[in-house]
Image 1 (tube, rainbow, N blue to C red):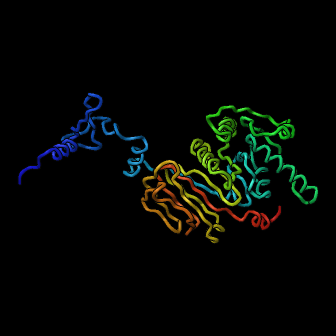
Image 2: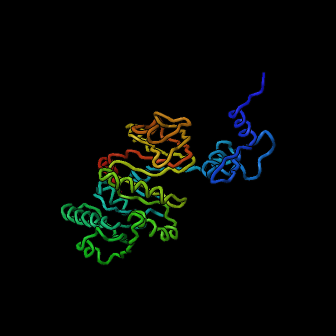
Image 3: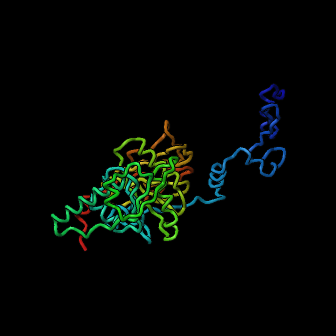
Length: 335
């Protein structure tokens, strides 16, 4: 049989031998071949020329050279009677949206917080909540003790009202005028030194999922911008908890009530394609699946066991339905 010839055969040979050239702006550019060439060992570093750090790290993990980073999550500490995250407490943050989380839950999370912050117009909503709770206390002698005071108000202060400024006149206020970031993002940045000093890792944010889509997406963007080993941000609405799963292997301990009642959960590849996602413990599991918008997403899923594992090579948004808060608090025995 005659050897293959022609331009296609030549290009194929050049690709195999690592000799493929291209012309760009009048210069010859050598395209280094990823991996070992049949003609000899590759030049040191040549295989990295066209690989991002994420791609290299993922390939190393798939080759079992580098084990995936492991994360463990216990959302039950946030949505059951403990209402506390971390050994050193958590940050409670009120955004400029209506507080949808039931009052009983807000009070317990607020009480157990190590730092309490309102973000710009969120201080208006917190003032309304404080006033409403004071009225409730007067009408019910068995109501819990007064709410702990705010530690700080941050923001560019284009939403806080004069009445609210006067109401919280003794509360420290930090002006963050930068318009290249949201008040939410800037608030976490302001609090980061205090969190580091006091070894606080978790931020619980009262979040409204029924508002404008751009506000919801901006809050999700903050999850991405604030992803750090020492900072976990949880968005809490009236019936759900949402947080970011970074590349690695995640174990989520699901409260038994959520498994028994088959509450919903979802995995969303916001912002970029996840090329390899594998799950266990869900009713509908994924196996080395690619996830992206316009392709595969996982919504309206539920649980097969109390332990869910998610292994991913890219960031994913995890969201889960929470308890019926009002009913759960009524069932919690008083101490």
